[in-house]
Length: 139
Image 1 (cartoon, helix red, strand yellow):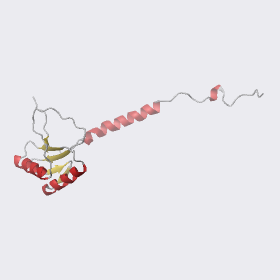
Image 2 (tube, rainbow, N blue to C red):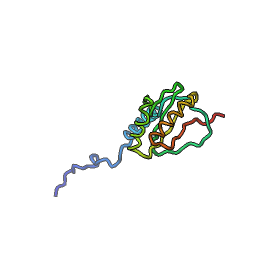
Image 3 (tube, helix red, strand yellow):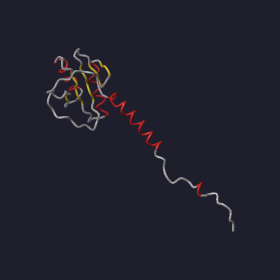
Image 4 (cartoon, rainbow, N blue to C red):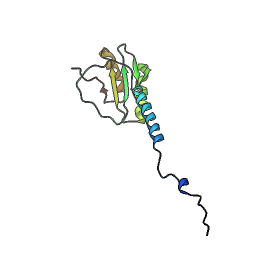
């Protein structure tokens, strides 16, 4: 029998523990990245929303947001769009996702005429339910 030293001495045994320090470092870096980028993911165009008391809605699907500024300019999500292109573009999007909710974010100083025109165009695109986005009432 061989009585020499084994290649797997006590000093050379494989480590049975996981070093979690690099894992924690990576997770902290990812946490910081997500904390920095989360505010940048806010949706839509800056508008001064009117105040109203209404309960917040719970949505599982990202809605389609039409924003109307006080000057009458219209945005679909974050992109400016001509009013003549609004109905065909939304109808095309609804063909792909028929249950896609549609919300209107109208600036508080937007004339009602602009909001009514957009709602009429949405109706021609086959949308019967439209949500109006408001801010909680300040007390």
